[in-house]
Length: 481
Ligand code: SF4
Image (cartoon, rainbow, N blue to C red; front, side, top):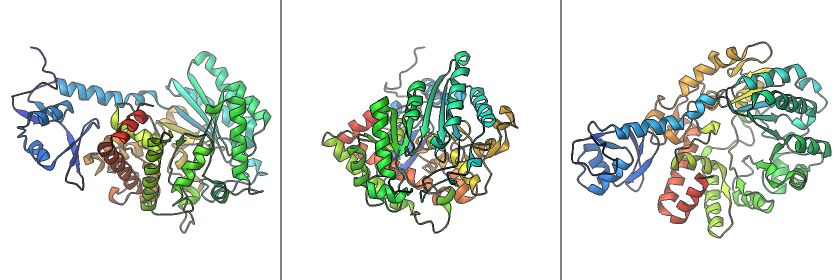
């Protein structure tokens, strides 16, 4: 018998497919299906859905199109949901794509929010050794991922270029037989960028990621260094990279400190004035030094939500005036919200991105499930230490309880509150954050700043999407990037 199409009217008995819902202040109800496709219903429409008394053919068509109800016994909606669910998880088979090498803890900056125990420039005992670096390259190639990104971090990685070069050359040599798609990124403040580094980056197709916290005085206040010229050196480095390697070879990230709050327009303007079209309005991380009590940069997540809201209002206003600019986190969320694609961003995945999305090789050979896990270890909490890259096998690292337990415990599909949450498919699990702030990988979501932040972002984006046709068009463009 011919299978009935999802949009065709039905007269048989209906039954629910799995869905979740969230009430809005204006009495609308957001309903999401098990792959995160959404529909807003009026209060009365939601009551008819709950009671399965759906007399309105238009409403029935909408609910069937979103696989929220089906005719009893109908297989096609279930098969489509299964296919979409499988597609959303296809990256799991390709773990681990990102490998972070902490080539040194040394740094000539002393940023107030620094998430690691940065060490003075002379302390070379905090550099990664060649033996550790080569073992870490070997571990990276044990990953089944067809794409492997090598990211060099610190401290300041340009202080240990010898190891950056060794890892890059060894990875390229190995890849002659491996045939993976490799990418190399140096996360640097660019203060020490010179022609030699640029020659190397040119030869090996290396990209740069740098910090730009906003206007000059704000950036230099957040990121002190001898000479108080961090902003000037970062901008000069960005310009040199663009001139020599191309505009696309350097990206920038900002961190929102207490001093940044209230200045989101200045930050966005600074990015535009310096040729960036992407701004990532990142809250400060609660790890490492930033976790310490009475830390002068600490603020409540509510203050960041106000900052984000004002920033997004401004970004939408700029786009309406013909100035293209993207808020990076929103674009990642919108990809999950509006398409079936998984952008693979580690903070927005469940199972969590720790270990299976990224691995971190510390200068001393310790392997961590995430950079945040390493930051905790620098402050004495080694919960997310998986082992040692020279002493432990790849199998031992990837199957240890320090990785598997938090992955299982934090999975949003079964976690209390998350498993009932209408936003679950767009959200992620962050066991390191919740361990750091609540003492366990799951946390208590009503008290979780992670949950509060994401809920605010989801609500903001949905409100603008449904109320503003211009924003809707723009959000589709962001989701399609
Ligand atoms: S963290 Fe919060 S917003 Fe995210 S799925 Fe869980 S309950 Fe929902």
